Length: 117
Image (cartoon, rainbow, N blue to C red; front, top):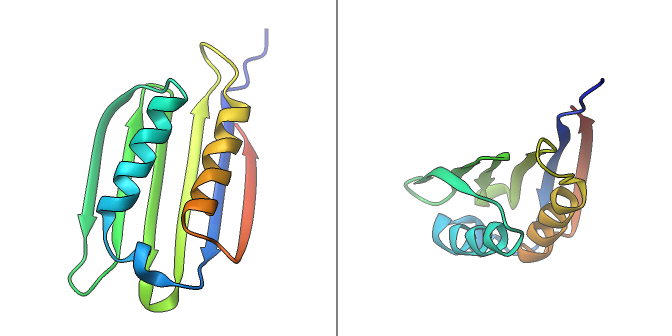
């Protein structure tokens, strides 16, 4: 039997307004609401706000992880979502979390890499 662990999406995104890229608090609230809405289980998280603006954050899930790093001075962030398909197929949830985050930041341009693990 072949096991395919899951879908891993990685984005580099540009925004018109960098305000949401300065502090982790708005995104932390948003992403925790998202993970709860999709029935994902958080097992740990770390967020760090940099002096002068920008943040990094990771949410560890029983299903895997979500991470982000922002550069407000460049109106840019990188983001990835990897969800395991161990107990259920999470491919659509992975795509939805990516799309919802791009919408949250009002992304105007992005590149997306798709890895089938």
